[in-house]
Length: 401
Image (cartoon, rainbow, N blue to C red; front, side, top):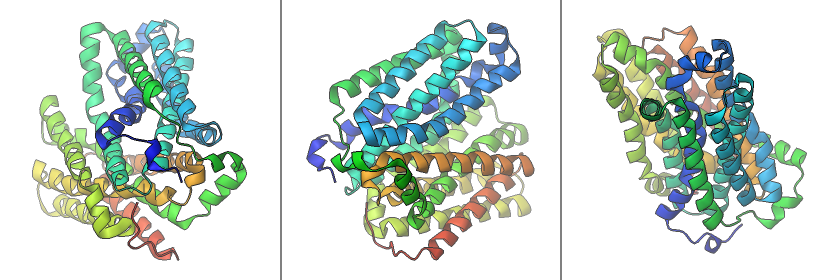
């Protein structure tokens, strides 16, 4: 295990160094949304092609980590995070200058690949440095909150930039942020890869990770957290604006309270882990999801739709998301310090598939303007996670990150 002295940063300094890479990948998707409807005319193409740029970005962001995770285990975290920043930045600059739909698609793929590389190397570094330190729970909790927080505000930022500078300004902004983050990392990001990692074969790494019950338990917990927010993100506009008649501004403020609760709760992640351990925190997180789902169901059945009946259960689930994110990554990856890059890649890939498939089915199959998609997804996913915990023969109670 890497000695912490090789990463001589305070928690605020570490967050300032790593958080931009947690944010860039999500920004690349969500900040672009306000101009999507205009892009067919701008690039002289069809709406289907523009939709392809969104779909490919999500696919490459998830699948790309399966490439860059093992690469980070072989050549190191530093070159992968720096390479990801350079690729993301250059692709973003190219997107700001292109007038060709074909080139735009290629550059979106490269931009997403850069985001995937930087993201997986960042989380592998967190695993290298903070696996045995209480700050790890705080960092994971904050990063999980950020990934959920960005979709709430990135479109508003994109709309403001578009209004002031045009759609190309959005991609110039992404290029500038990547350049600043990459320069900061170039000057201050040390290599954290344990030396023994380099000799581990890729096939053995995958088998080892996928055969771990603890890995699956905590990955399912993380999928429950991110999937619940995804379904909330997909259904909240219909409930708050269509059903309750909120303006776009009021909607944005109310919607963002969930992310705010998550960020506040994440600050206490280290305290929770010290008191309850990783397993105890995961159990309590799943219990909060079940409670939030029950409250949503009762509100849907017995009470008229209101901001209270919708948002109060979502605040409960926000606490559940924060508590789960504080322990999920460490719980899933804790046995894979020598192959943290590969394990991290598999962890995020599985989570993205579960969220995309199960979350979309919940929204499509259930009434999207009701509480049912969130209530059903959270309840079923939390129940499966708890069931997986009960099947695990490994006693994780009281383990700290």
